[in-house]
Structure formats: structure tokens, C-alpha cells
Length: 255
Image (cartoon, rainbow, N blue to C red; front, side, top):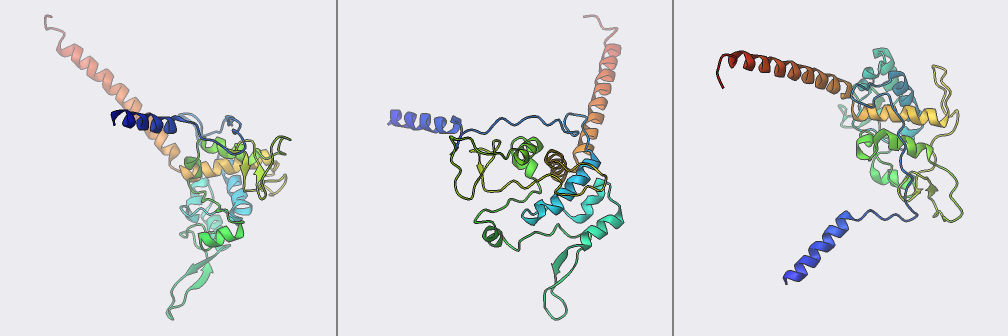
């Protein structure tokens, strides 16, 4: 009985330690994109994040929701109150009930959450051949590699090698685990018209929308890092003062 229990334990450990198996092969290692927010002192590139919001709104929002984000949060990207109100007003938001007990639609307000492209998950699956487009609110936290993974995924579409057979309804992506993904390549050159004149290459759009999604997932990142640096400086000074006081108190004591 003890031997059987030991074998079961070995099997469980083996299953936990074993690397995941993928249908079409291992994904290519994710390269380091070197975003502006990387590192202890990294900060968000507001211009890039604003362009990334444009990419999300004009491309990604057709399938992907961001239920945890409100239009008013865009103020933190540097948009003015008038710009935020104008963006929110572009969408029809279901509200109610009214005095007659009926639901109705109205122009969006800054306090509203981002409008989802589908009323429910079943409708989303029906519109995407059974695949459910994930919510992007905290996607950089939900995927190993964060923004680097998202950038790699968006730029990793290519023709499959001769040895790989892509299943019906799937697309080859060298950075996706298993290399086959239901979502087709979402970005194409000059797909959006940047207001600041930046060239809308696939790489640039992927970089910008990855920056925006990182900001959406961690809008407090800069404040948290700034507070951490202040705490480290404070503790360093406090340690120095504590050591000086200790030396002063024990200076006349024989050891």
C-alpha cells in the first residue's frame, strides 16, 4: 500500500513538472520589446498609449471588450475632459428602466464602462465561429510575458512551414503556444490614420496597443514605483540615523 501511494505521488509530481504539450509544436521564445515602462524607473509613453487606444477602438473593439475600464479613465492618458466626453458620446449605452419600465439607449458618458461589442458570451461565440474573444482589461497580467507577449503575438502571423498542417478556421502564429490560433491577423499596414502623423506599420500599431493595454491593466504603475523609491530612500536614511545613534549611545561603554 505504501509503495502504491509512493507511485501515485511520483506520477503527480511528474504531471506537475512536465512541460505542456502543444498540438503543432513549441512556440518561438518571446523577444524583449524594450517598452518605456520596463524597469524600476520606467514610465508610460503617453503618446504611444493614446495611439494604442485608437488602435483598440478602431480595430480590437469590434471583438474584444474591456469591461473594467471606464471612459473617464482616459483622462489619465492625457486626454482632455472634452475629448473624453466626445469619445464616450460616440457609443450607445443601454440604460434604464425609465418611468415606463422600459430599457433604452443613450449616448455614453465619461462615467460609463467601455461598451462591450456583444451583449453576452453566447453572442460573442456565435459571431466568432465558436471562439470567445477574451476581455482585454487585464490581458497583460493574464498572459506570461505581458506586453512583450502581446506584441509578439500581433506580429507573429506568417505562412506555416511545409511540415505543419493548419486546421480549418485556424491561423499560424509562431509565438502562440501550439502555433495555431483562431484569431486571424488583426493588424494590417496603414489600418489606422494616426492624428500625429506616425506611420501606422504593423509593428508600430502592435507596440502602441500593447502599451495601451499595459496601462489599462496597471494604471497605477508609475505612482507605485515612485512610492517604492521614496520608501527605499526613507528606509536608507532611517538605517543610517539608527546606526549613528547606536554608535553614539554605546561609544562610552567598555566591551
